[in-house]
Length: 92
Image (tube, rainbow, N blue to C red; front, side, top):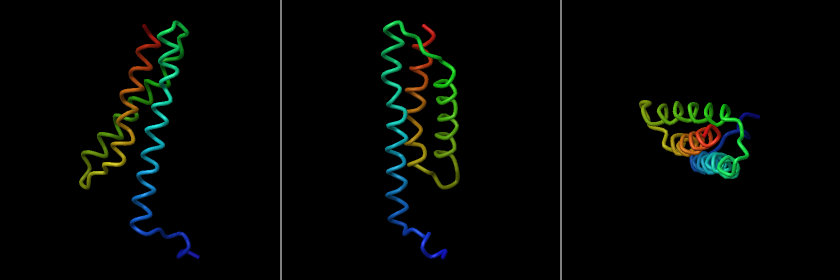
């Protein structure tokens, strides 16, 4: 039964990069909220600010652990930028 759940190293690498891509897309999806904020339809700043803080911690973890985890850091780096931009535009 356990054998069916195992993935090859190549499959794990592909899964990691697909997950990275989807994570980046999740943060890029802040773009419409940023545009609405700039147009005067302000959204809540708390969720994107918390996302930016969370992403900062994951990027730090991925880059500074003993064996770097570049996909983890790459997946979360856009969240810092888009989260902060979204939070700031909601406030100004």
